[in-house]
Image (tube, rainbow, N blue to C red):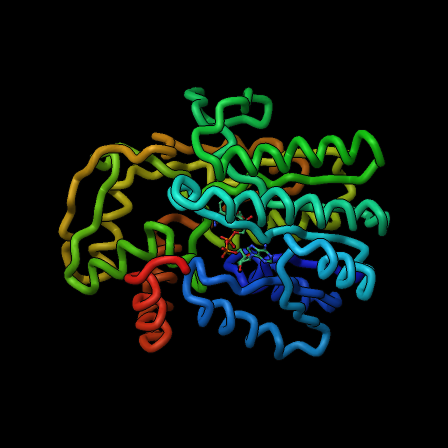
Amino acid sequence: MPTILVTGSAGFIGFYVAKTLLAAGHTVVGIDNFNAYYAAELKRARTDMLSGWGNFFPVEIDLADTGSTTRCCMEYRPEIICHLAAQAGVRYSLINPHTYERSNLAGFINLIENARSLSVKRFVYASSSSVYGGNIKLPYSEDDPVNTPVSLYAATKRANELIAYTYNHLYGLQTIGLRFFTVYGEWGRPDMAYWSFLENILNGEPIRVFNHGMNRRDFTYIDDIISGVTTSLTSIDLDGYEIINLGNNNPVELLDFIDILEELAGKPAIKQMVAAQPGDVVATYADISKARKKLGFQPETSIRQGLERFVSWYRDFPDLMKTVREHRLVGPR
Ligand SMILES: NC(=O)c1ccc[n+]([C@@H]2O[C@H](COP(=O)([O-])OP(=O)(O)OC[C@H]3O[C@@H](n4cnc5c(N)ncnc54)[C@H](O)[C@@H]3O)[C@@H](O)[C@H]2O)c1
């Protein structure tokens, strides 16, 4: 079985991808820099679980560091790369642009350069629904124009797709870009609304409902996403350069999503209705016909089922949730 390099293995999606690959018997090298965008304790807890497998090799480096990245790639010589590490978050990109420059641009180029020099079989990387930016046609299809990113985060993700195109064109490197749509679930991301809303509802604190609750999101449950990602690493039905939407194909109104969270929390939310935020888009909705055809992708988890699992998991880890909350109250470091 090929050795697979998973970057961002201490992150939400990377942790699940690594876990699934390890369980299938792959050797997995996991890169992460454990940055403090959200509580590093959560990243350590995920990595501790992965370290239970003898075929897991964690490497703590920053992908923006060219020398460390190259040394790691030359030491382990992966045959497939699944690049999920990035500085995520739309709003944070408005106030901290250079973090995005380092992780999402310099880090991406360092890694794809190594993919080229190692002649890896496939370079799969995380893109985002945010590349659709000012697109008003729904659902979002891979054929839609994506020249109007409305945040720096989105612009870096679109840049990744363009760089991947160039590497395929120049060097024949097979590159597969996966546009993820609002992924949620257990061991998830504390900066995202499903987590911060639950936390605030449970603590009797107000939640800020952007765009007066008019936003719609195509929330996609983690298990559904993971099946799409792992299939994309080995499927033989993919061309040299691909961009594929991975979403739920079923957008949910923000207020309906809050209703479910209130019910599961057993408490009403204190809602502060506020204007849309710069960088936000009104709706995300994935056309997944390409993913269905090429990856057999078929999301199966309703928002209620997924949130039930998330809330139940959240209640099982009170100490970790307290640490995450303390970090969030101070903000990214
Ligand atoms: N979760 C979503 O809803 C969503 C939606 C669209 C796109 N994505 C993309 O999917 C990927 C995974 O997202 P996630 O939700 O797991 O985020 P995450 O923040 O939980 O995971 C990213 C991981 O990458 C690591 N990292 C960041 N910069 C690094 C660097 N320079 N060097 C080494 N490690 C670094 C972080 O420490 C973190 O553990 C990201 O590329 C993200 O942009 C996620």
